[in-house]
Image 1 (cartoon, rainbow, N blue to C red):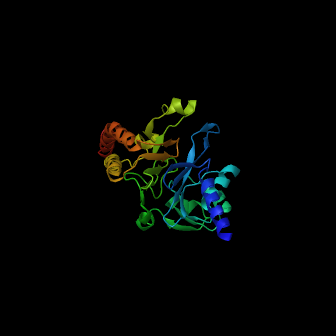
Image 2: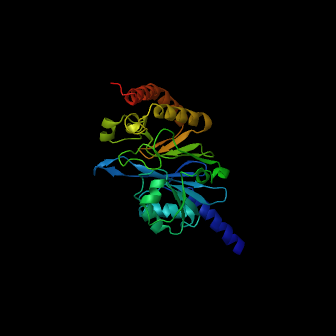
Image 3: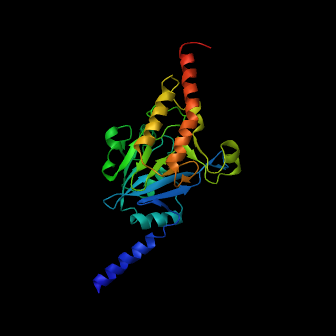
Length: 281
């Protein structure tokens, strides 16, 4: 009888986890949670976080968002009330708002962040720094890989430069998680459409061709080589971006097209920086 009750409970948990709305299962062992994030008080550019199930049955959490009661119920169901969360990783230096609230809901977790997170959020006891290659490799045994773009400042980025973020590949779901560096427009509002592009567009952050990269002749070409190599090295179909949506299927193909379309602009920026460096007009 006790075995029957136990099996019934297990079956109930499995059935419940098949409906984890508003969590979106992008692929095997990967769940995405999207949330609103308003700038200038009224423009919703969106943001996101992810839950990746590890081989141990525990979860790696990427970034944090503001969580409502419905979302908390889904997270609790997925992670047994947070008991199965192994660690939380902050991937973007300026995505900082919701880590303390998340830590108050799910206390006692291990947190890993960018150097700016470690400097700015003293209320959290940080376990590791993403600038450390050894930290970035912690979850490679679960085929989770983290890379930092070349050609831009990661340790101490200027306050007005939100270009750089760590990229995360989850191999099992063939999904890349990325914040501002790359944007995918999924059902954008009218303001976003007028400023950035139409539904289904993928683009680099607007600062890429301005102040996002180091103002050196080498930096634009370093980033171009880095992002091209990422497409060669990483096998992925999906890309979950903070702003403004998830590209499900054919993400690698679309990113490759974006890279080649942007290459002339990056090469031109390199030449422009060279001229400035040589003191020419």
